[in-house]
Length: 534
Ligand SMILES: Cc1cc2nc3c(=O)[nH]c(=O)nc-3n(C[C@H](O)[C@H](O)[C@H](O)COP(=O)(O)OP(=O)(O)OC[C@H]3O[C@@H](n4cnc5c(N)ncnc54)[C@H](O)[C@@H]3O)c2cc1C
Image (cartoon, rainbow, N blue to C red; front, side):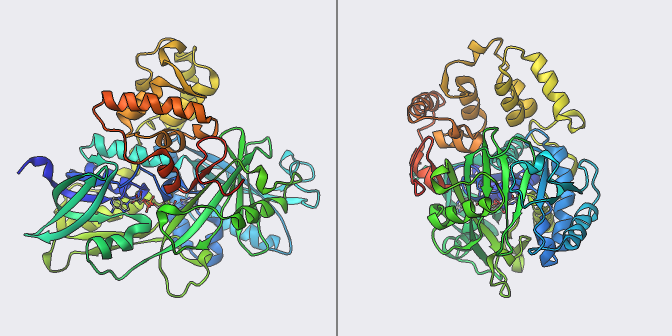
């Protein structure tokens, strides 16, 4: 039997948890295959609020353990990937009738001290009447609080984990669905379907079910297994509008319904506002924002900002489904724990299956570490956990000093326009040098296919980051979709078809529109697909 049919571990799902587990396991010497039915980060892991955070609001639910774990991870991740993860300060205007000042001060004190904090400044009060942070806010806002968390490019975090996994020996197969699997002679025998047409049979000593919102469905319908846990699907949506303020802090607003929403500087020219929390019963692949959610988010912002926004101002939206751990005692979706649970079924020395329920982008690394630790005994893994001090691809920046790195980067490529240099440095970190290795002048980047997108980058994304469709490039490997036009998407599509043919890959069966819909994306500026908003 061909060697590429046999693996130690089959990881199902190329979201953050699957990619993180594949990376950890490959680094411990396992022969890993990761299969993802769509694109990497094609679903929940590109639809988050993009915060690496302890979760200030979870303190109200007494989730001290989760907050401590997440705060600790915040420091680990800021060091591991300083190009795609960076500090962000948050301003919370004080609204006395929603939460008293003593309560917020106590919460922020805990937030500052629950875990060791070396990279981020602590919290403080701010006089909004006198400070620039108060300028965009309504005049009724006098006092506020400022605290630290971090920002992450969620979709790129997934891709970087997949790259690292691959460089440590894992095989990454996108557009490849686990169709079925059963145990036979102490192994899992699995049938994968690539590009909806090619069946592939493989054998694995263990399976990790990291199918996110599909985790329960995968277990019951494709693997015919039972589990003690279940996922609870909770939808969350975001809107993007033209930028509403000029500084680099984000806002956290308290709503009368006790929820909070964020207004975050986004891609230089925009403000990202989210999120919602709604029970979801539909197909996770078809999630999209409702007009009620758009109104809810506009109203939430309008309670605080001087400038009022309405649904017609919304330029882009996205939605995702949180695959939360089902808890019988939590009726309110906002109250369901954001912590995770790993369920290992290795009874009677059978080939094990480990399922992931719940989790956050922030805690993916420790989730992955715990998952592989659980497999240590059944798979006889001898190498110990290793990711706590390892950088992610492109993140090997001395002292995690992104600004120092950027200065060196700019002086190395003086011909790169500053905005482009900044985007390359942030997206690819030290890997940008590989992408630009043959370039000595702007002309060497090739044709500009879409605003800010040159041929050299597209080539790199196809060759090194599994990009197969325009959506992969415009909405996940980058957010250049915000600047694209229908004709530039067409130009990109033609180039992509050519590059994929040269690389010997068939164009993906997933069309641009389908991928956008699958990710819950509604774009008005560019590849307009399932617009409900306007
Ligand atoms: C609105 C919203 C805001 C959030 N904000 C934050 C935040 O700010 N910070 C934070 O830390 N977390 C946040 N989260 C949580 C975080 O995004 C999720 O916990 C995380 O992305 C889940 O990752 P996952 O890998 O489990 O699932 P997914 O990313 O959905 O990955 C699962 C993958 O499995 C694949 N799959 C399913 N079935 C199969 C099959 N049969 N074969 C092959 N592949 C299959 C799917 O295609 C999918 O890509 C947010 C979530 C939402 C929805």
